[in-house]
Image (cartoon, rainbow, N blue to C red; front, side):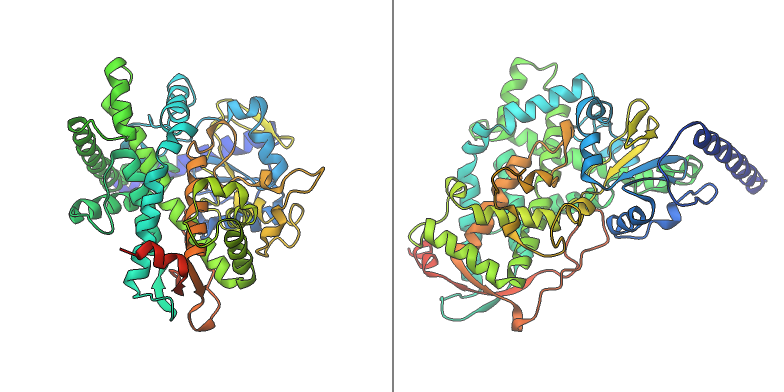
Length: 501
């Protein structure tokens, strides 16, 4: 009897979907798209990497096209002009909501964090806190000693782990070094704790933290069919139970860190600053608000920087002439008597170009975080109904042959400023765009550039056995290297000074 009811429900849904979407299509000029299957729509097409699939669809249907994921309409934008249309003027306001999925309901405190909150007073307050209180230029400068200390520790570990005397090239796995550095940097800024490397004694807590971050990233977005086909929520209780448990585990972990910071108020950390604000405005700076800000910093600021640095090093190893040019610039401007510092970056335009070219070809988030309009809008002359999921394919825009000469080529020189021309760097969107762009963009840019410059300054680098680095990406929503990066390195003269007792 139960199966009969389910079949009848599916038939009614099929009839309803067909009437709903066909009638809307006749009334509105929606973006074009491929034919959809009954009920599931285009879910059958979703074979990763999704950013490459969307590029192929845009080549057939144009720079803006529509899909249907079950009961939810999706519009994909793949051109710079249309992306700018989305993120400027009134459209940017209307498109400042996030679509709701199951995971952030439980992990992100019922959609109340800066990344998941609906556009409104609460989100504006969170954004103001990020911009003025925890990620301002002044506060990031105050945290520079942490970045410098973690970089120095990484360089020392790299040299000592490989018994690097400066004579022979030794093999090294780069990803663990970068991952530990970026995790330590963010967690020290937020709470003052170090989890990885030397002088740490909380391995169990460190592993729990990294595991929770990995699970949240793996379950982010709309990873459950019930997010698209409401009838399947009846059968999705196991998934919902899993993400609810994940949210509870992360909340317990964050509460523990918050309580530690509350007991030790001497440190210069983001949490201690927020606790000071809590004393004056306890009704707004609640523990949940503070934990939400901690969660946003830790999720967004750890993995993405490590992924970008790994792609940057892979590109340099595959293009030794670029590596030598970047090294010559650093040697000429900084030398081998002291370690590169953040103020030096302004005098190293080629190093900045290398970072920009990495952001262009290998953005950590190839699809920008989804938006959802609060009312019907027009993009590119097409109607986009309210509550549509709007995706911008930054990866496709960064490789658009109408915007970039030789778009598949790694060529940092393309970002040299040319008189009278719009800087090409303005065409990039590795941190999103518009009013909901990532508030940590400045921090991400700083840490990636400083770490990359330090690795170039302190070591000579070569490919293993002279073989070209495999640049294949993983199929997930975050664009990682499929094959973790291995290389050989040899310490340069500056490392002898850093390692001297």
